Each structure stands twice: as structure tokens, then as C-alpha cells.
Length: 509
Image (cartoon, rainbow, N blue to C red; front, side):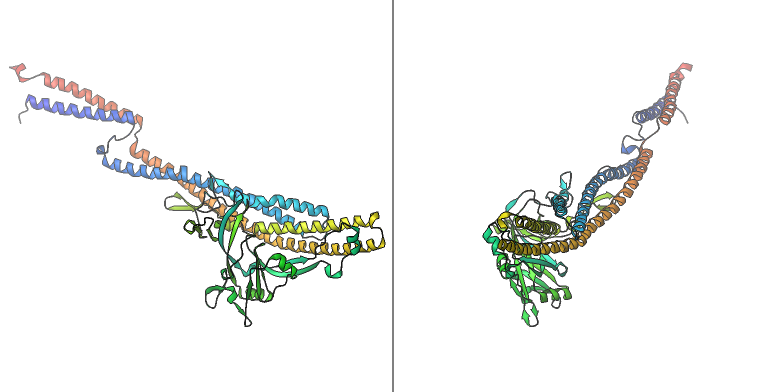
């Protein structure tokens, strides 16, 4: 085969250009320390790089954003639950103190002061927020658990479910002693018929007081035989229908000596209570009856629970029915995606932790100790009056003796009622505290899962970064060695071409 000068020149140019391209490629690699600068250089590396970068970006989202956000939410919730547990534990201790028989007036004042200082803080902890998102209110993270201010015009229609387990005894009292101020009143004494009296009835307490008059059609019970809700007034006991009364005032009932029929239910809007007759209470307990009551309430005080976090309800503040806002109580779990195909519930709902009756229980404990303090103050005042000169005559002394007997009886009732309520409060607040403890335990288990996932995400992040580096990056030392060899090859090709193309056949002719 004959090789011409043009062939030598062309091949030399191709070889030099190839070496030059190789030098340029290695020069780019040395500058960027990357294996390729465009996908066409190596499609396999490019495809793997896209996949690894996508996975690493998702990992970084989980590890650097989602997991820290979830941890912040859990830590805020944990702090609030810890405070709730402490507060309920303190109230539990006060219930133990109040349930004793040997209380002095100083002891009662101390109990009252402590309980009042703890009352407002219980639900306040439920307003804990993480980055201005309330952690105990489900999906409604922009709404506090309680009313921030007095809202006297706000009106809700609330449907509250009541269990037979909510039936409890309550003591009612008449003929409260009013310490006389004049000699004539002192001498009049106290008739036997006007001595303080105690009445015990069965009652069910709603979560709110000062509600509006109840429509009896909205008081229903669950009829298991028919598997449906029916009006309580349709319940039949021993051939007689239950009587539901909702238009009787508390004062009128007190004037009737707190009388309630065996088959009667009386609703009091002032206190948000249902007083039930003995036969109805027995029937409900034996058949484990459930009640549903729909009532309206207008006007909420600062610190009261917002109904939408606990009950099916409707905000009917606006007179225009089209603007009413309806809320349905449901499980509202907020879940963060913390890993590939893995979600974690970060929130704890207030209805699962704080009972809606806590504040009303504290109010009753407060009222009971205040009644006991007032009753013993009356005794102290009457005993002081007994030593005063203006009441030294026998008639006045006899009158004061009767007043003292009435006051002591009232104090005895008040002490007994306080002991009963505080003894009952021991069990209630122990249960409230147990609910919070259970919520903390559940939250702790979720935090442990988050820790495990965070460790795994950290390991995976390191692994993917290593794989990405192996796929894309080059060691500078290796590039320098290859570049030096390629540059030497390019220089040698230049020198060889210069010699090969410098001589032709004409030089020998």
C-alpha cells in the first residue's frame, strides 16, 4: 500500500487533535474535579448522578428540615404536658389535704389560695405554640385552645355526649345562716324549722354553665333496643313517661326544698346541670345509658375552652344562618414525613389530655372551701358577740345560743360537703393526671422513633453522599497523573508530526 504525504499529514493531524481533546478533557476534570461536564460524555454516570442527587435532596429535606421541625413540635408538647402533670399533681395534693377532718381556718385559706392560683394555669398550658402554631388544637393550629378575651356576643350551639358514669351525688343546702346585726334579731333566735338543711340529689353536670333554656327535644338518650337516639321525654319507666323540665329557675327550685320526682329530669341553665330522679339514675346506671344534649351558650369568659376543640358544635354568632360555622369533632392527627414512606404523628390533641370538666371541678372545690370558711367565720363572729355587753341579757344570750347552733350545723354540713368533694377530687385528679402521664408516655415513644429515624437518615445521608462522590468526583492526584501523561503524549505527537511532515520525496530527487 502506498502511503502519501497527505495521508501522513492527515493522520498526524487526527492524532494530534485526539491527544489535544484528551488534554482538554483532563484539564476540565482537573479544574472541576468532576468526571464529566456534560451528560453526553458518559450517559451511565449522568443517569446515576441524577438518581443519587434526587435521593440525596429528599434525604436532606427529611434530615435537615422535617425531622428538626417534628422534634421542635414534640419538645414544645412535652414541656406543656410536663407542666400540666405538675399542676394536676399539685391539685391532687390539695384534694388530699382538703379531705381530712382536722382542718383549721388557716388550712382552709391555704387550700383556697393554692387552688385558685393553679386554676387558670391548667388550660393555659393547652395554648402552647410552636412557631405560632398551637400544638394541642388539631388541624386548627391558628386557633387557641381557650378564649383569649371575654367574648360576650359569641354564641355556640353545642352537642355534648354524656355517659351514665357522669351521674354523681350533689348536696344542696337551704336556710343559710345570716349573722344578725341588731339586738332584736339576736333575741329572735332561730326557729327549728329555719335551721340549715341538707338535700342530696343525683345530677349530671355539663361542661359549661350559664347556658340558654334547653328545648326538651334536644335532650336524647340512646335506645339500644331500637339502636337509635330518642327524646328522653319518650323514655318509659314502670309505665310512666319521664318528665323533663327546663323552665324552672334555681331559686324557685330551692324554694321547693330541692324536690325532684323519681321519674323527673330538671335542667338548670344557670349552672348547666341536669338533676335526675332516683329511678332514672338507677335505670341509666343499670342499662349504661348514653345521653346527648344540644344546647346554646352565648358569652364566653377569658380562659374558657373553645367548644370546637371538644364537641360537635356550630358557631351561630352571626344572625345570618348562611354565615354559621359548623365544627365536627374528629381525630385530627398532624403527620410529618420523616423518611421515605414513613410518617410520624407529632401532635397531641387537647381532648385526649385535658378533660373539659377540670375547670368546673376546680370551681366546685373552690366553692366548697369558701363555704366552709364562711361558715366558720360566722361561728367566730357569733362567739365574739356572745361576750359583748350589748348582748349580755339572758334573752340575747339564748338567742345567740340558737344562732350558734344553726351556724355550727351549717359549718358541719359545709365541712362534710368539702370532705366529700375533696375525697372525690382525689380520684378525679388522679385520673386527670394519669391521662397526661399516658400522653407523655405516648409522646416519648414517638420521640424515640424520631431519634431512631434521625440516626438512620444520618447514616443514609453519609452513604448517599459517598456514592454520589464516587460516581461524579475524581481525586486531584489521579487527574494530575493522567493529565501529565496526556500532555506528554500530546507534546510527543507534535514533535513526531514535525519530523514526519518535514521531509518529502522531493528532498531525495
